[in-house]
Picture 1: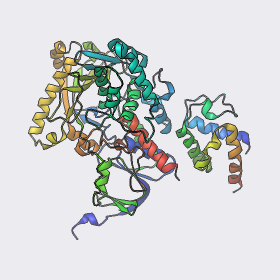
Picture 2 (picture 1 turned 90 degrees about the vertical axis):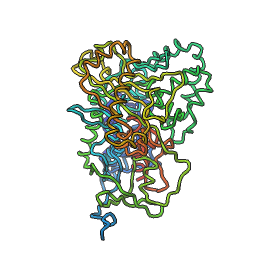
Picture 3 (picture 1 turned 30 degrees about the vertical axis):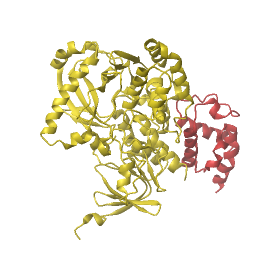
Picture 4 (picture 1 turned 60 degrees about the horizontal axis):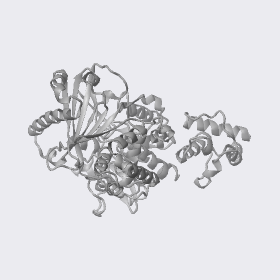
Length: 86
Length: 480
């Protein structure tokens, strides 16, 4: 697992919950909200899908760690690594 | 031991139990099951959909609630339509609904009319043309509406009539704006709360009206399919006798069959008062919870050909005979003063068809209809049906002249009354939009018992489903 893979996982989830969004040119360092039509309901779904598909828990207080692909990668990578070794 | 109701025939348990398979209940069930919750969904009636269901007569299926699906994502409203959010949340591709947009619709008061389409600019031009002196005040009102936190759960439920009357727009325009918004979602007599007014104004005028090609089944069928795939335990013909509580928790539900289901969380979509009744507690009469009384009668004509054969091109016509809008529970069986005509076949641009429908809705009195015994009930229904369907012709171009032709082509008429609304919704008084008191966040005085649906205050098909989703998301999924 590396940051690139984590970003791809997040993008795959977004593609699933918002199939009408164009994800071909998402910038890693810009807030997802600022480049895509995503609202708080969609972010809840990213969290729910991370748990459902990958067993990763994101507490509500930390939802904002998911604001960009870069921050997702930084925040989620240790969690993925921890769950891989668990 | 003769009282079988006190002896549970069996006991099972679930994570979430949902009372009512209307659109709010269905949407909540899908959301929860999507994320692994064990869900039992109970429905008293034999079909799902609640108010937005359908019934069959002589081989034809009739939608009960659906005049229009609001919130059409028109080019001018773009991605802001809640309908798109809803489709995302339920993983229901919007293309699958095969939405047919409206042609145009109209609000007619006496001799004045305002037309609207799915292009908000056109509606603005109609206001300008018909109420030139009100343009500035109307624009200010629009600004005020945009600034008001209508979509927040704690929006203040002030009177829309008061706000509109104070806005300086023409008094007739006030009445004409209240008409479609009340008919599509007000539980209050002759008024609507301002936040709901704004949501419906956006839903009807800024976004727009459409209809799935297959009617309400285009929404119900895929939801049912999802419930099946997700393993939701859906039970039809399954009424609830009571909800048992202990301290500040709801613990289990007793079914009419005698079965008991224990649940960690319960979502009730049957209404504030109706849920309170199920609690079987010494009533804490909440003075602030008002009882809804507004109900309707609807007559339907099925005729050969297409409405456009008659030169009728509009989809929905809201009408009121005088300049003053009347919207309340009438003293008589039916109030003919105001009403709504829906011509579902005029969604989309088909110009021919084998068979079409015309639906005409009026306010009606639930208790007066309920008090009628057979055969008088049937007789009155037939008599009113004829009056309703004929009077509606006054509001269609050349309607009266074309009436004999239309009658000659008619092969079926049918009517449902407030009693039908009661059967489909279980609302006290057959109240179309439930109690005038709403609980937007779905909370109750019991920690794990939530309200969704009509009395949550998000109205219409889109509103009901988003309400169910919001309770599932905010009260259950988020808090785990």
